[in-house]
Image: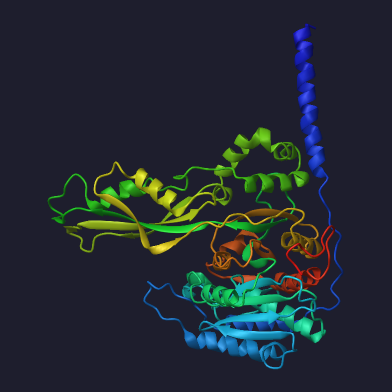
Length: 507
């Protein structure tokens, strides 16, 4: 065999051994010790508690809808919560207090035994999105319960979190279990319409108290299975960053004409030509450090040959990027997305309108700005005459960069450790929150840089489709585990993880 062939085979063998070594190295995942088991269990009445909360139609409406907030529904829900949890709201122990903020939001403070430890905050929201009742199997505000599910608007967004947090706190009060580390529970009332009266007001109030938080956990990504090729294990996605938000109005204006004498193009056809450029890949794709961390976290759990690919991201990065771009569920993780959501045109069948317009909603990838996306939109249609692009009614917010998710981060690792306790079969991986949450107001208020968006429930893709859709429901098992999770998380935050003591900025 010629020497050159020998050298080539040697080089190939060495390279393959190197890939195998890297793969084996990543298989050795860091394991944290499991925390103590739950000592008590929640009563079966927690399901009826959630069902009753769902029966209050706490719908929040966008300011442009022309509809008014149903104040009586929010007041009714608040009275029900107060009656169900009297040891929190009527005769609490001295270490618990609460405050009504804005018109309907609630902030609960749980004081810790050690005031030198930075508190943290757990969040949820009381409001829900509108419904089309005709399309539901069970009426959306009946709180229907069967052997498996609790049905209704808010079952997965976000009254399950509200009630699970309150059930957790009620259990700690019952056990006379004051935590070492204090925490807040923030319940906003208008998250679905940007949180300006709820979370933003809560954030301002905490600022006046000069509160600093160790971490914040709000609603967010969930536990799913079968969404990543080569990984069959359930994956708990923790949203460590959040996409920005921008709605633009695309408008075409000319002069009105009679339909019997049309021009070559009308405002509607011109607008259609412009809108055809706003596909889900209209903006460039980027593989960020967060995507790399996500892929590497999954590598030890992937089957062959995916484990080779994921373990050697540096080599297979273009292949991974190509594969992610082909599925909606992963494409949105690597680019600013575009979706045409509203279109307006003519009003009479025999008149060509002088204007036509549409709204395009963007979810902005961290690393890009609102102005960059707006300019990109303008560049997309600059060659089409009579077309303009402008921000729609101040409907925008910048993306929020990634919070720390390293092995030495107290908040992230406690969330991870709690997942390992409640869902021991699940992988925990950082990811990007593609929707918006109340956390943007807490980030803007500089309460902490450690913000995590995660709802610890195991959902199928069918379950996820009911969020903001029809037949929203949560399994009783998921709801019980959700309450268990919050109880265990607050217990974990009283303990010390490996290499963790008091932080440098704690007393």
